[in-house]
Length: 223
Ligand SMILES: Nc1ncnc2c1ncn2[C@@H]1O[C@H](COP(=O)(O)OP(=O)(O)OP(=O)(O)O)[C@@H](O)[C@H]1O
Ligand SMILES: [Mg+2]
Image (cartoon, rainbow, N blue to C red; front, side, top):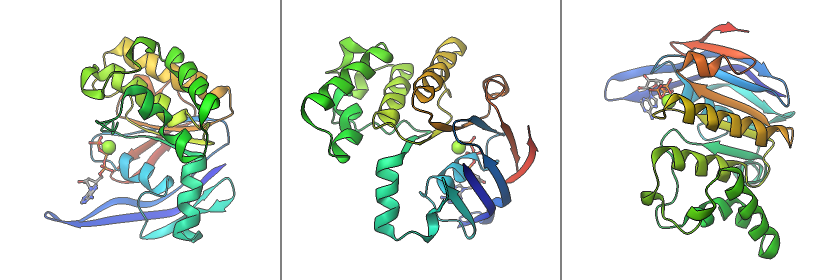
């Protein structure tokens, strides 16, 4: 189970003090596909970053499968992230100088998976995302939807227990967006992966359960 207890996060920036997350308490059961839904600026990315240990909250605690992640040492936290976390970033974040296959293989390498096991896993993922012919392509040679599919494959390559997806369908047409969501769902299901997806798209959010509504950094609905 993923549990957030009284998470608060503010930023000091050019526009003064911004309270991005204000006292959020929620939980998502293991194996669920949850959505965090809200308009631009409501705090979705900040909340996902806090859940994944990428941004330290000012207050509150995050428990991932029983572990309070901000009580871990930096070394233990990065070990936890490397082994158990998959993150699909809002801005893609494929490494531009690595091929599609190398991008997908990166979390495998980081987890010490090499040789035939690594090659087989990459091949299976390329088939899952329907991009086998693009294995040797570089990210700039891909369409937006193809980049999103590679990002999904990379995020799940090492069978993470937790997949955090930040607007994985943004800037995609409806059909491609639904395909990306289905891909996450299918690939997550096979390994009992818990998925939390941020989206501003109500239709995409409605395919998830629970749907957590976020407004001005606060939970407004939790179904
Ligand atoms: N690093 C930062 N420094 C300063 N302010 C920030 C930072 N990150 C986020 N914010 C502010 O915190 C608030 C929430 O931002 P966040 O990115 O979490 O929203 P979001 O719901 O993901 O929006 P979008 O749908 O546009 O991606 C916004 O007002 C934003 O400007
Ligand atoms: Mg965002």
